[in-house]
Length: 607
Image 1: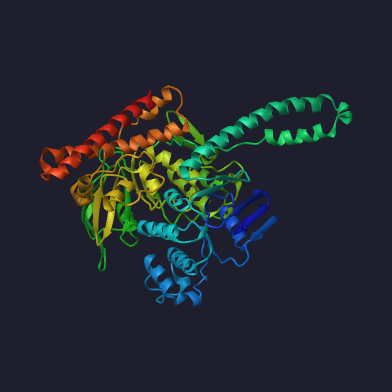
Image 2: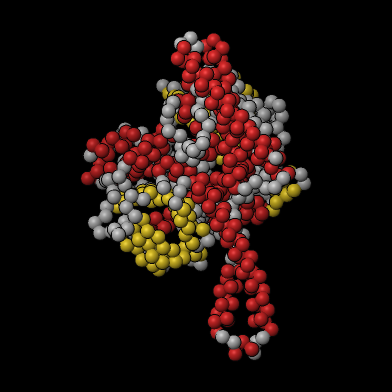
């Protein structure tokens, strides 16, 4: 049996009184591609730093295969990292830089570049060195969608062994085959994709909770014996006394489930929301907007995508009034209350405690229907334990700071949310909480994000920034846009392959990709009623797999209906070629059958 590339044995690490992980062991074998998942502050980045030799550890052993060439991209790049002379002048490095949007490597010193540029240059360097074993910490941060997809394909084709931390679940599915989860100081292994991980994690937590209940019952019996028979204990076997303390430890264990539903009340929003009238903006020769007009509808959820430098963040600042347009104007309804999540975060007072930051805004938060949460309870919804709430801001990780920033935005009860790259540095459990909140949010939403899974979950349609002031509306989510833009392109593994519905016909794709400029249409996409979840709650609770199946059906039904309508239009006179007519007829029968089966299953799950 070959020696593993990496062998971790009984590794333990604490920071002060906080244990990050204890007695964990795992191996990384040649060719494995492993994703490491955990909440912010649990120790993902610390573990990678330890393996890379950047941070010490308390106990355990780390062994690499002899002669192994190792590459490491940390989450935070220091300004003095620079580029090694051996790599800088190589053709491969130059080509990788170009793919990552850096074409002026000699024009500015490394330490004078933005954090995003430093991260991309460091990524190009570590890839150019062609390591045998590569560790990446949040590699998709600061990459636009095209770069993320390029990196996916690069890593998939490279003969490389990989250990990475990422919150991008489609990226995880496309690149990795195994998942390691750090939870409750322990490590758990899952051999499968993200959907498989969710299913098995839910089963693990259910089993652990059942085990904890069993030990709690046993603990009460043993505790009673320990209290009632102090003299008899001396004559009892020592093993029973020792066993009591083991039982006590297991009985007091708590499993923190992150499937939290945050239902913060949004302020009332009137019929008049937000209107843009012939707005234009440019910086020199760079056009951001050209006569942009749009009328936002109530409860509209818009995603913004486009390459870096096309003006997405500038567009948000114009909407918020932080920048003034060159011509045209915005007309904002009197009931609109903006909530703005900034990509760069907020400059919190390092000497304050987490609970103090929230209490400075409000002591209690209105959830609607007469329900209120204290500041402490609200923080727990965003996965800050009571102990963490009394930590100083200076001790927070980057992801924990972003999570705190998110709390301060949502607790003000906005009815128009503007989120600029909200997924950067947030862990997957926090993203799940945020996604569920946004799906139920009774207000308007504009979100800029390169996280495709997140976009697919929360938006109704997209503003696609093409550059030079050109913005087009696409009536669908990211995966649908990608299918329309690149027919036949591989769908992210996270969007089911087995038994998945047929893709939208080529005719519909062509019409969607050539949709009119945003200013000429509203573009809001109708959504299927949310009665599915309500209906399910009236009967027995859906299992984890059934809930995921229901969500997938609700995503696919509009696609089937859309393709059916397009085929009907083709067959009613749009086609003249006999072979094309025969193919369309056969396809129509397939779509109708799939639609009937999907609708029947939708009804079964809701009953």
